[in-house]
Image (cartoon, rainbow, N blue to C red; front, top):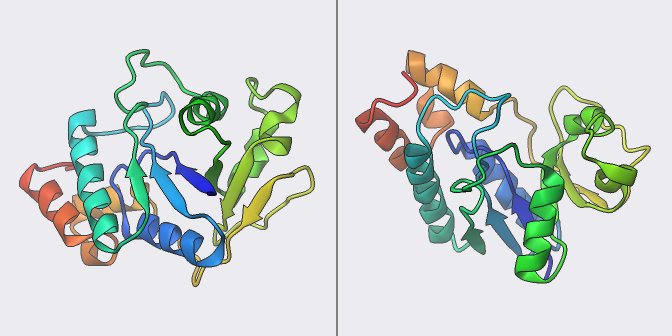
Length: 195
């Protein structure tokens, strides 16, 4: 069975995350997706506690399961005792050991620009050995010249919606129904998150 790892911040989970999952199931032979929220990274502003982020992700998972999608949640890295910056390589090794096969990892296409600069990427492991699924960015022309072992997912539409966009709109309460599921929006409002 082909499995994909969705290892992102989900801060908060948006309708675009849902769209990506639906398109992967529709346009590839992936049979299961494991949602794997990351620990707080030095280069991101998380704005909320991991407890709240974990609760938002739980609500997101409930929505996905209600849609009968083959989804699993793994909070190992969200609750990671090491609390250091985790690399894609470490995540890949963790899941190979856990599920006994190498999963695919989900990326935006623009990550290709930075992969060669990652100092923990020995012998171009990410480009050549890691199994990858790329989701197109609206504004990015995909350069796949150094890549092997990947799938490019054609989506119904390209979007600039991201968790960053969601956090900005939450502060201003602009068009939130277009980017967040109702139960996630209610939780954010009730707990006064991202304001």
